[in-house]
Length: 436
Image 1 (cartoon, rainbow, N blue to C red):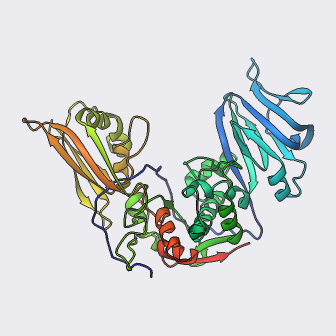
Image 2 (cartoon, one colour):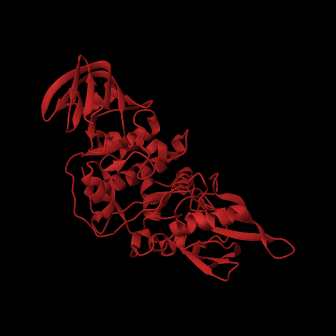
Image 3 (cartoon, helix red, strand yellow):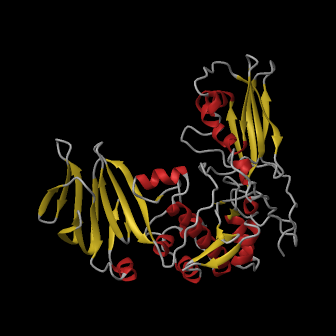
């Protein structure tokens, strides 16, 4: 049974960091009658590239075939005068526009994906490659693959290792959600998407978009999920839906407008309870990030104030912060119990405020890891003079909390829910449609 909307879990907790999006929700019209090709940026801003080719490839430059490569290494560097230079089998070439590396079996993409591959930095990829030189003396490396092949390198990274057949429905839901995400990135409707389009690719291969590891993480269950759902996407009112997802909701997902400030509400991206009405437990209760604790010293807190405040709230950019923190508390919460407003007071009497998911940025570690989620409670310890000694942050969940809870989807799948039920639960009012 789908849990009743409005059931909530009032346990406070924190989770793993996920990046923040800058999104706009104007609905584009884009239709694919056949499987599209996606352009994935594997690297940018690098001064040299070394590729190992396995199989038979030909290289083209400005539309002309210039070389063949069979089981060989290709290198791309810059000469002393700053000119891009390619070291190809039996020749060296200076070039100004992209060089494309195409498998001889390109007319049969499935065959190419299975027999031909290119290795870059210990990761092996199918499809075609493009090496793009830039005027600042760096290269960009782009992998061009059919969308379903791309998903084979994405879906296994988005769910836990060693999936079982009991989790197939969750894997199918993830495959569809990941396909939706890719559709929107390829559409180029957002400001960030337009930036990417100007640079000649659709998605990054890391957590800025979806983690894509090429052939390395191929998984038979994920392959089955992708094949079963080939060409399927989630639609709302006849248009593709934005299927955001995250690791662990901690008992309740969140409204999109609360997580990314300034974004309008979307009916299918409103928070839903993740409680199983049959047993009263969250579907994501078995996530290793469901409960967590972070302890910070006073010195760490004061360093975060100086280092992270402007990133958490750009209003404070350029402000000199010399005083120590005297108070730290959540003063408003959303229905999901996530932090709405975090108030930071300093000993000089100044109060600073951080909203919504940006609270995770205030607590960013020196290594760049965000606080796991904005569903947390803070307990301060003080010395005899009332000065803060430490803060204990206890939280629930991992990620931004919008859309599908991946551990919740796994829990629902284990209980016998179908992928359609999982998607309609986390994206209310949507339907699954096959578009190619």
